[in-house]
Image 1 (cartoon, rainbow, N blue to C red):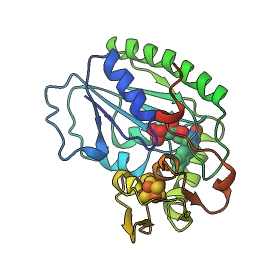
Image 2 (image 1 turned 30 degrees about the vertical axis):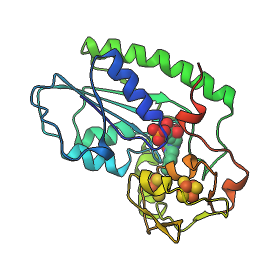
Image 3 (image 1 turned 180 degrees about the vertical axis):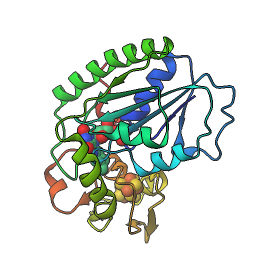
Image 4 (image 1 turned 135 degrees about the vertical axis):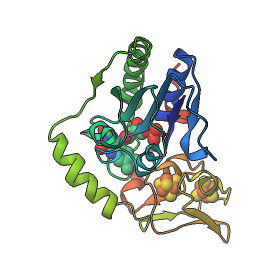
Length: 244
Ligand SMILES: Cc1cc2nc3c(=O)[nH]c(=O)nc-3n(C[C@H](O)[C@H](O)[C@H](O)COP(=O)(O)O)c2cc1C
Ligand code: SF4
Ligand code: SF4
């Protein structure tokens, strides 16, 4: 059984690729009504994006509900470039046999420019290759730690990640432009259930996961975050990651 959390599709794609190679099933943790019975599972996997050099809060919350079994446990994080000690932080609460990172297209549109199409293509081609290696190692039950931690990894995962969760997950800067047609997709798809429609336009409750699905996925490109996102592109795996 492979569980995943994904804002913009990278981690969903990686989980589904692994599930295909391992003849396993990939389940979205944000859609789970209840935890399936895991007692007979030979392997349990977890795939998620890195947020400020740490695992997203809903992922940490989810793993606390996982029973301790004899299954081989592995985790794969997807990140734009560096995961810091995200996997070490995860391992403190969920004992994993193997940890990996996959460098994937950056979706952090509120903080930086996004990758161009050439970079997206290169990252996905490299990730496809890495996923095949990961699947072989999981089948062989190898214990592996192959994570692109980057510099000052410990500091980023402790200090900066704490700051992110404490101060940067407010929704105050999200706003909607007149091009919004009230389709409601952002509200329906928000994994934190933070968005509702008021007079046909989205409004945000105070805090969210910062998965950036709403801003990246809006078909009208009507959502902005402060002023910085006006000149930036948008990224979802579905729209930009199809390199075939
Ligand atoms: C709030 C937030 C914080 C992020 N922080 C990092 C980071 O610390 N390091 C990194 O390499 N990428 C970072 N990213 C980029 C994502 O981890 C990366 O694009 C990931 O593959 C997105 O996965 P998803 O499409 O499954 O949501 C961040 C993205 C978001 C939305
Ligand atoms: S997805 Fe975009 S167009 Fe649809 S309601 Fe949300 S902001 Fe408006
Ligand atoms: S409000 Fe937007 S960024 Fe926040 S959790 Fe919902 S979809 Fe993700």
